[in-house]
Amino acid sequence: MIELDGLTKRFGAKTAVDNLSFQVKPGLVTGFLGPNGAGKSTTMRMMLDLDNPTSGAVRIYGKRYRELREPLKHVGALLDAKAMHGGRSAYNNLLCLAQSNGIPQRRVAEVLDLVGLAPVARKKSKGFSLGMGQRLGIASALLGDPQILMFDEPVNGLDPEGILWIRNLMKGLAAEGRTIFVSSHLMSEMALTADHLIVIGQGRLLADTSMADFIHQNSRSFVRMRSPQLEQLKDVLHEAGIAPVGVPDGGALEIDGVGAEQLGELAARHRIVLHELSPQRASLEEAFMRMTADSVEYHAHAPGAPGAAIDNPARPADVPAWGAGFDAADSTRKGGR
Amino acid sequence: MTPTTTTPDRPRSYSSPLPSPRPHLGHALASEWTKLISIRSTLWTLGALVLTVVGVGMLFVSQTSDRDYESISFTTPALFGLMVGQVAVMVLGVLTISSEHATGLVRTTFTAAPDRFRVLTAKYLVFSVTAFTVTALSVFVVGIAASLAHGGAAAGAHTADEWLGAAAGCLYVTLLGVLALAIGALVRHSAGAIAVMLGVVTLPPVLGAMLIVWEAVAPIGREILQRNVPVALSQLFGMQEGGDLGAAPSNFSNVLILVLITGATVAASYVMVGRRDV
Image 1 (cartoon, one colour):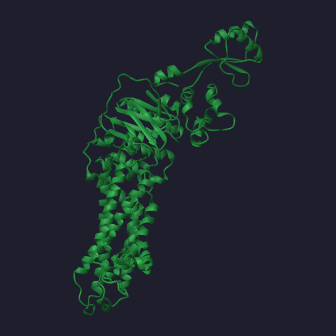
Image 2 (cartoon, rainbow over the protein chains, first blue to last red):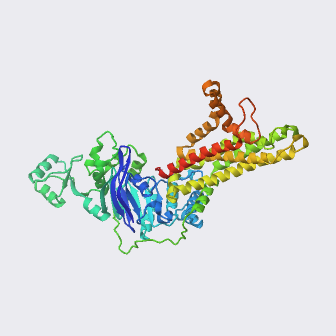
Image 3 (spheres, each protein chain N blue to C red):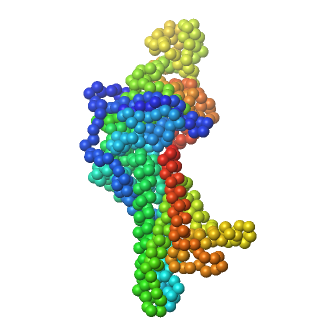
């Protein structure tokens, strides 16, 4: 159980985390979602007492992190997989952490085996690929066999196989009754792993809801119509009192709140040829982007109006424009899946 | 997209079978020792220290005769290498902490051990014991070699005091290393901290020489010229500085000054490390 109470962090005039209060409940995977720069990492650093909050407090089982007797047994954290000394072997990197908490040496070999790094245990960690480094970071989080696990963007830069591995690992750890707190800027990733969802934007709490509720509330459905007689179709819809919500491109119309059956019959009555009549569901990624659109810290100002991608939820093809300008690795990965 | 829903039969708590002793300073010392011996830079810096002190020292011993030791100590040959070798000790002191900041490892370290004072204390202890041991061993190897090779009647009388002076000299170099570690903890940047330490060692002789020319501040210049690091170290190793600067300050007062400066900087490092965001 982790409780945040009015947690605030200011860096000079900039407020990184703004009066954040929520609970992370045991036995669940809690997704911590927000665009880049929303204050996720700062919040996690304050949870671990690495950064001092400007005001507010974090309690882990009722105590401050610093007051935990055996920190690694309570909380395992992966903040930054690169936070290892590259000149040290994977084994020694973990050994010095284990020793500082009196964790037996055999546990180091155990976790290295668990994450699949046993064959490279004696290799220097600076030669590790992104995925191997991430696995080493996860091994360090698992070292104390803790009740609470915190992962900051664990799938960042991983290949599909690595992403699947982490997803299953997190589910398995939660199934053992552990508390998992995982941050991400990818809604689609959270939808697959998280039971509970906390969304922040510009340091403020935007949503604190169960995943099921979020899906229920945010999966907007609509019907897409395409026709060579677009103007006629528009007139017919207008006469019937139906206003299209979106007119994306190529002569398609999007209609909210009216069933595909009714629309099809309406078109048939007026002898309008339809090339497409398809019920659509907006993805959770789009719902998340609508929720955080106002609080995205760094918009990509790509030519072709990036705002359109956010206002118009029906075009997943435009999704990578969000943030694409400053995090090429992310958008590549997003496009690749 | 298949949403995961909460399974009601899932356990709500987890208890690890691992033994969990309450961590104390001993654990922190073991951890810091592993850190020190598991990186290459320790080998390089301490290796450079041993090579310069023993190498230059032995060369000096082989090129001198018994008579030369009438006016100097048997430990003096170790001084020349140590003048260079002290830089290696300072670099290792800085790297002991700044490498953690450079790699971000410090966050992992403080997550595993949130008692930052314990981590810092372990760093100071492990570093100073290691630095003193290696320095003293190299110095005494040279000193013993000199006394064995040139201990004849022509060398004159030698007392135990010169060995004590050399031990104090090793302590002096270790203190410089501890000061470097403290500066590293404050500056958190390898190159910056090493630059500061090089300034501490090399600037005062230059500054003193400049000030002594200027009438109004000449006494200050004289004081700096007599008390800076190279001079103090030479004196501890039995090289009496000649010249017209007047009576040299005692070894004790020289060591005391460094103890005070180092102590104040170490205290500042505790305050800053305890308070700062990492």
